[in-house]
Length: 340
Image 1 (spheres, rainbow, N blue to C red):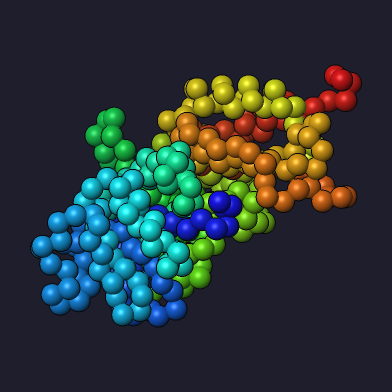
Image 2 (cartoon, rainbow, N blue to C red; image 1 turned 180 degrees about the horizontal axis):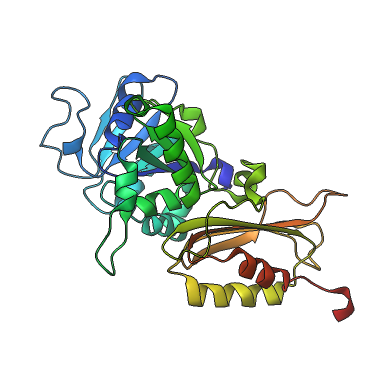
């Protein structure tokens, strides 16, 4: 099955109180343009309709069908079994939303869907969306965690492709802009969408293929501008670094670079992405994207067009990142004519 024919899954993260439940209710009750399957970790947190969600729902196969064609499903078994049951009906839906209450790191979900044949044959990751409470997100980002543990709010922001900055009615313009700057300092790549009461424009978070390298690098043309305003050597910060340069890469050298990087830095690298041109591969354009040490790599759907400038683009989101060092190491992977 082609990627275009697979059912897109949008993974929703966000700290407690950010508005995930309100978003689910909006999708299941108030909008009528999309038919969506929403997978919930616990029905107890969601009030869909009086008496509709009952304690008698015992298995992951139980589905609640709404008047607008959406369905709600509880993940009471494992994710593979739940999505496997839903696969029988997946062509009835425009998209699947998977809400990850209590899960700070979406990496296991991404890894499961992409590597398990029962999942990857039917589904694809479409986007990672984080809800952020404009009033309280900063205090969650600043929370000091015990040594060895992670700050869930920071991880949720760092992994996302889209950030829904919610509850804007609770902050003034100055506070809103300060929060947006803070979120951008963690994840410069993610698009920030302003919302109230979680009423997100669904066409900006569903079926947008923002997890696809070819489309996501076109979202923000300024991403690769070297305009960092903060100290990138502050190792306590999570940051995003973009590297871009012309030329063709030497495949062996680039592979060695990535192997060394993932061996030494996988824990610090939350997201990695790349759009590549290799010497000797004709007009084939290559893409890769990763979550920690899991990397997917292969040919892009589109080829390099005749006369198109060969520009390699890389995105790194994580801790302890040094733009100058990453740029130098990547450019050392360029193929040089005198070496043939």
